[in-house]
Length: 618
Image 1 (tube, rainbow, N blue to C red):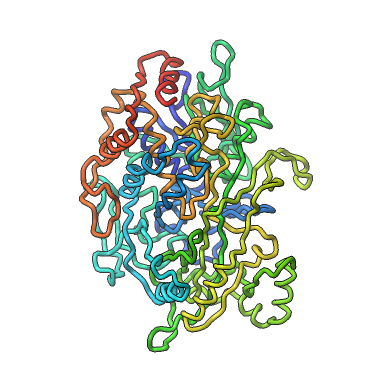
Image 2: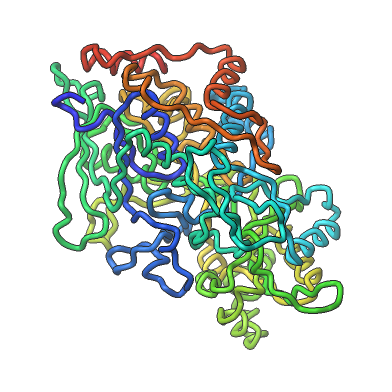
């Protein structure tokens, strides 16, 4: 390891980008540390009571140490996962590949015109690592969505989702039967069948959800990666080389502290050859803004940092319905996956249905539904909402009451490919006593964020009718503030061809700095119109191929991940068994005509091996 460095690579964050980076770097012979500010959760630790906010929400200053963090700004409300495994702990497991035209858009094509071809092998690899399979379990909530699609002339777009869950061999078996290791030829963790409880976003208690701890992080730790939970990074400092240059060639020093203690935060430093930032948009971007604008430790980061942060152009619509079957009987819809099916009401919009477990009433309370309020001319929606509330006060009170609502509520997650964004900047706010911080803003000429999509309102009205009656509503905070709610924040550290149009290159390396990389949703340069987790993983896998072997001896001692024969319903085009990572690498080289990166030998001088790494990925 050497006397000067505690680790070869420190990965900040353990979500999709961080988990992939940790695994692949360990396979290349790096000694890797993963820092995660959240707790480490065992399956049985996840709460069965959504009102237990201490286990649900993350706000350490209030004594809340749960797995969901909500950040509220003037322009956006962002929801993200916290804990070892990051967003995978609480995401809805949906693994969709964007339409081809997304990769032809300017934000993507300005770097490579063939992104879809470049990422294809890594989409396949990510799908196998996550056990992505096609959902075959539906209920009356999905039937109502199919009727909605039919009524809107879009039946051909209806489909059930591809998802990262271990389905039972008999779709009607909800016993949670043990399956051993069904994915990794006996080397992975033992698993259990899905019980179709819809508890995916609160944390799966039944060992059926393919979170990152069940695959990427499992094998990373097998390879010797150390994971330190409840630890946050507060400062990044590029160390000077013998000539006084601070471009990362001499490594980095991270200042870290406890993320959960109120006092005695045990602040200390860690020295590392390289850093991978994978803390998500609202973790990575503020950390880099602070390093550039406040601490002055990374002053040469591109001025594009924080530009064009996107929400996937999303909004939420609440539907509390009777869900009557063909016999006219009212049904609960809490059985199934959290997200099970989708359709496209027009060519730029996608709607996915979200259901909740029976114990999910607190999730309904967090959305605070109010009567559906359409926009009319120049009249502010807030005024129209007030008029709605005055006309229908009892209906409004009934909708705002969350008790007992979870079993009969479906939320529309509405996403669009239309490109809208905000920007993140450093700012000292008066109400925080002018302490250094960050803010979001919209600039003249930007296409502003929106949470009102008329086609989604039309779909909601069709849906309520198809479900046998009920009420559709908007999220109160979205109407009052105009700020959309999203769990799919992307961008802000966009991939570019130079510092003039991006912050990092296609390997995630920050322009102007060596061995400083960003590998998370911040990389995504444009709206996807679908859930982004699979694309983040594909980008991470692609970026890791650009990094050469660091220590050949150590790398040779790492056992490759070997895959079992795919299970029925798995969707990856990598449909073989054995060492599929090697197969994906071969396909990537064939698709792009590139050469594998050269080896950076650990026996060479420290400055030289870092330089070789950069030469190989430039």
